Image (cartoon, rainbow, N blue to C red; front, top):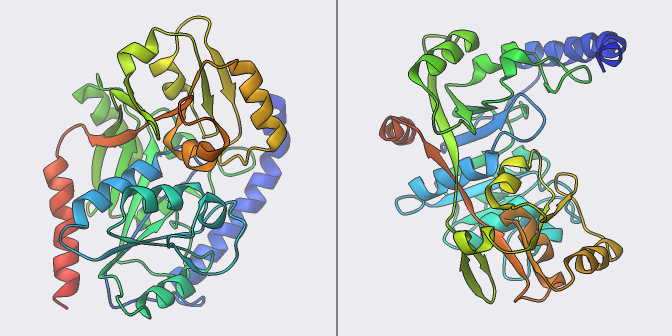
Length: 340
């Protein structure tokens, strides 16, 4: 593995040079960034996948939707539609992508849209008869053609961007210096036993600017799994034979939370579209046992299994401390922007 990384080093340098030049052109205004007259909050990361963007977007939705008209705008990764799509009663995961469809199902009070061209997506949202007052950009940290009012950068506890390297040698989409665009940096997926000393060491490693705020969050799993047919306490699920299925980045915490010795564990790539033959194989391996999957996977495969067999486990992002400080930072940004 080490020798392979060394071989990839020249390609990583070239990729880093290209992304750095691109960012320089945007920073200097040579390449155009479009600003909008409403608060736009971009949530993203420097690395490829697995930092917990979905639960963080959901946290922001819960914080804002009762007071403001909120919209989310995503690329709609691996969807089978094209262009701008605004979710409605005919939408599904194939049309929207799994994460946007999850938002749509969980939060019917908001608008959910997808468009690879975020500038066009925002323009289309604002042209609606009932336009949003706030737009949350999902996974758009590198989408420089839109100039968001606030950037939130996520980095996973076990995979900090300051310890990583540019693709393809590492997992970074751009240089670590891209973190300077963020006003808020969140270390996600922290162990709940994280000490103050460890937090201080990470803060020193991340080397934040004076205008940046740092927060720590952990993933909180629900104590119940759900299906269209009902719900079962996790304590009961943990003790029975079952199949665990996940098509997400870094699913180990999900498996570790639920599995017992002898459980069948099925791993698939992130955002995986399950073929008919794969569904048949999963059913064969389950042999009528319960199948527990992630919430993101469930929205893609719920109609492919008997409703009494397939369940999902919800998760949430929880701030380890200073949740009120984070909430106030978001609300203050919106209030100041709206007062302009």
